[in-house]
Image (tube, rainbow over all chains, first blue to last red; front, side, top):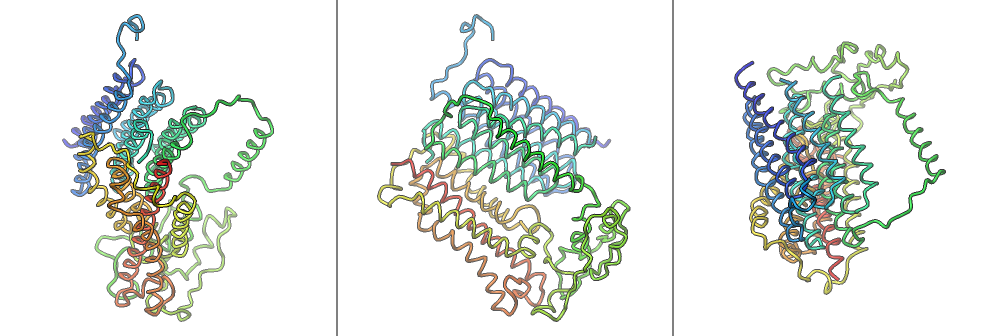
Length: 106
Length: 87
Length: 401
């Protein structure tokens, strides 16, 4: 294995772990705002790591530039979408879950 | 190397399953919008990985297209929920 | 269990779950969003089958525009389904089961997924691959292949059909084809190319029926089936016109009403201003690059339309009407179809048949075909983008009463 394949494997596995933990958090966390942390942050980071990892195994320059382009587009639009969802929920009156609401249990 | 791509793709699909559960069972509508948006982002990564699994590099165009489309769809849905109209 | 089958199974499971969810969920905008998810997953199924053009169109149209337009109809219809008592309707169930069984029985006759002995691989595709498609020729007739291109690798499939000859009039290999032994129909009358029967025979070498464009899907759609694509564009134009006839109100009421823009949110406004030029350029790139890679007129047109729709969502419909007034978008829906048929008419005026693009550049017909295909793809792109914009405007205009 060349060094670039090792780097790609490490970055891809890291991206996988982060993405999976984000999805798991979306199921288990008790409240919308907590799930927002899980889905929004992990998604943006995982896509960045995975696309950076794929850059190292691509043979030609044009595809590498396109990969970085997709990563940049997602880096700008995915957090914007998360922000828009949060703002809409807050303006609608949704309030965060507090521990005393259900006797301290999630 | 293709095993790494395949494993990543399967993990992303399993993540999509879990998000689909939240999209169906989310108590508020914002849970559903969040889950749909996250499925969209996972799909973008998945399309690129499919390109690497099969050895063709034209799939990146579709990733760019879907990134832009998912953003616009989320904004449209949010505008409807916030303002009640679509213009 | 290789990669393709595993991914296909998981994707089809996801598709089934989301389809059942669309029916079962009560709230209608959840159904609309799940429809977007369904379209997206179907696009992934097609990416898995390597049919990129179809996947492109499904993602752009199904995942993007259709979801936005469904949300637009929700404004009129309301948010929740009326609660129905769910009873089991036995005749409907039996009829549906019988129809489904008949469909499944019909698919048993089709070749297996990825089978190299399928008719598509023996009839047109070897001839098309054998004509060294994609290399712009400098002289009429069969052009030489570039360095390192080995046409031989495209002529054997899985060891079963060896050496399909380059000359399509030599059809002896069909006698030994596995399709003949397995009893499937293959055409026994070979394609007789009468070289002097039609104008432009000197421009089309005997093995050239598709044009010299690397993306075989685009060349099939725009050259081999050019009439079909022209009438598809006309159908889209008709859809836009019918929506205008059905839904448009007199001018005074409709579109000078103040919209409800999201432009007061700073982050959304700035990000939109950054993204819209990029989306527009990318839309034009997809239309123009359609003959070299996945893409084409339909996909690029939809992407252009989504850029305008994003502008309308964030800055309000009156701002969009300052940029693209309704008279302009109405006229442009027709201009696209006009460009398409105009290209065909230009070919006729230059001495050939309708939509015979080789006459656009008789010095090198391959370039002429590529030019003709680019022009018609632009026609398709203009019509599709303006029709999608018109539909969005009509649906959003309806509720400003």
